[in-house]
Image (tube, rainbow, N blue to C red; front, side):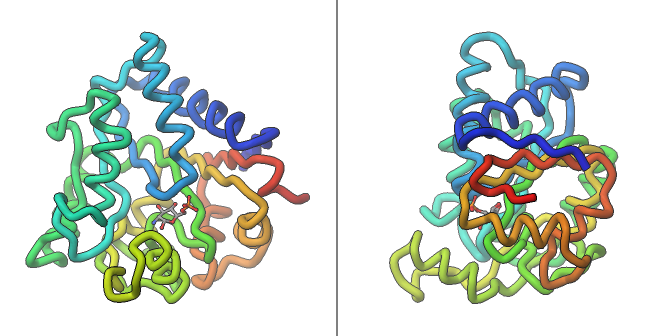
Length: 240
Ligand code: GLP
């Protein structure tokens, strides 16, 4: 496992952009997956700025969506697909034809998740997965307990993720209790993974993920088994 420790959040975002752009320069049509949440926002701004400056060309990327609430319509303000499109894909100039969304509003989510995994397998899996780290050790929306073999699926959110949702959506009633997430198997099977982590509130869960036992109760702990993982964390999130 490679470890890149940066001074602060801005430097972490730049380091993550460097990691990503170096690899896309070598494989412009890479199959990629990005996290949601607050951690990648600096990375997204950095990539948008680099594209405007002509330093990064995302025009051939193939993007798969990582996670969303379920059920939500893409036009719903809680839709993470809608958020990703507004904050990142549109400013980056990526049309929907370059994106495989998760079926956040599919009437038959089991069949739709199966189709997502088939579409991903047909292109050889993710080349590059950038992962955030949930406060309970989730990756994507794979809340604990999560097995490393779990496929893309609809799942019940943990109390911790529901509490986070309540902060965003104002009330328990407005907060979805289910999510749809790229599977553990799919994320862990990416050819290269960058785990981006910022802030002292992530310090304990990051240490458990990287140095603790492999356990379904800390889904990110299974990253210890994946080849080619780079942790990009700021000092606040890092302890030896
Ligand atoms: C969110 C998302 C993840 C994200 C994680 C951490 O709920 N499902 O994709 O990586 O939780 O979020 P944050 O970066 O805001 O701490």
